[in-house]
Every structure is written in C-alpha cells, then in structure tokens.
Image (cartoon, rainbow, N blue to C red; front, side, top):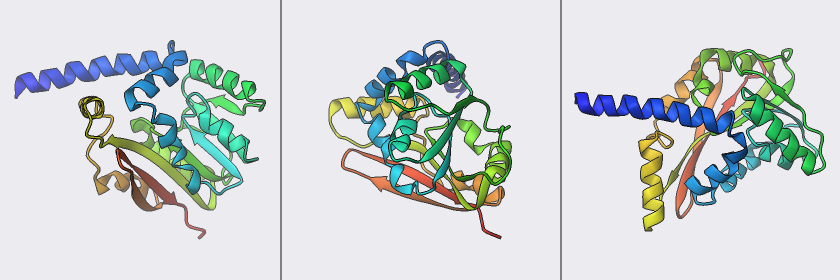
Length: 219
C-alpha cells in the first residue's frame, strides 16, 4: 500500500511539472499534445459543447489556444476569454488574429474575475483543472452571470475504442487522472454554490464525455 501511495505521489508531481510546461513555456505545443493523446478527437470533444451555447454574451474560463473563441466569433457571439497563463494568452491571440478576428482575452483567474455582476448570459469551460470546483470560482461565476444564465462545463472524456491504440490511450488517461470515474458527486460544488445543476453524458462509438449545466435562477 505504501509503495502504491509513493508511486501516486511521484506521478502527481510529474504531472504538475508536465502541465505547467504545457500551459506555460510550452503552450505552443498544446494542440499537438492534445491531438496525440486524444488520437485527433480533442477539437471534436470541445465542439460538443456548442449546442449548449445560446447566449449572446459569453465568458470562457481557460480559453487555451482559442479554438472556441474563433468558432463563436464566427457565429457573431460576443465572447471574452480568461486564462491564468500569459503564454497561452499570447498564443491564443495570435491564433484568433490569424482567423481575422479581434481577440478579447485577459490574463485572470476564475476565483477573482475582473467583471461587474450580471454581465454574461453564459460561462463555458472545456477540460478545466480542479479550479472549476473551487468555491471561489463558482461564487464568482454566479456573480457575473445574468439571472437565468448558465455555467456549462465539459470536465472529462473517456476513450472507449477497442483497438490497441485506443486501449493504450484510455489507460494513459486513467493513470494520469484525465478520465476519472464519473460520479454525481461532481455536481455537489455547483449545487452548494446555488446553481440548479444537471449533467448529460454523450456517448459515441469510441468515446464518451459528460457536460454539466449549472443554471442561475431568475429569482
């Protein structure tokens, strides 16, 4: 038991360093890494959140390389993005400009948003880290959402394919805690923050994912 605990601790530390490098000094490699580990499905997974987006004013937590920013700007949706990584912000701005749009991104943390209350119709976040469950994050999300607004989160995906590559990737996701077992307890932080919360599981032939919708009451 002790050896397993030590192994998990070492793995956690390695992952912290890896994700720091991926999001900070090596943010330029994010698309390549995500494509490899998902076998080209990463953008497909992210786009699964699009049918849930209906507001005209949207905030994205953790905009990453800016793919959702570009997609929503092409639909004339007013979108702003925040990210804690300055390097990722610079990378995303370049990508957005290359598509002919003006980026509206800011270096900020979800636990302390630089916006007044009741500004956004929706907040979206795809594959965020544990900060999304932080009480301060959810308090801030609730504050800046308009009454009747939604926080929409795509927290995880699971590879279900039976071929060798998919089985290896699924094992990698499991070992690195990128696809933890789905549990309704994931919804508790949202409920405790005052949101009316539900989750939907989307299943395809070789993968599945879950989308959480946290609704702010009009009253």
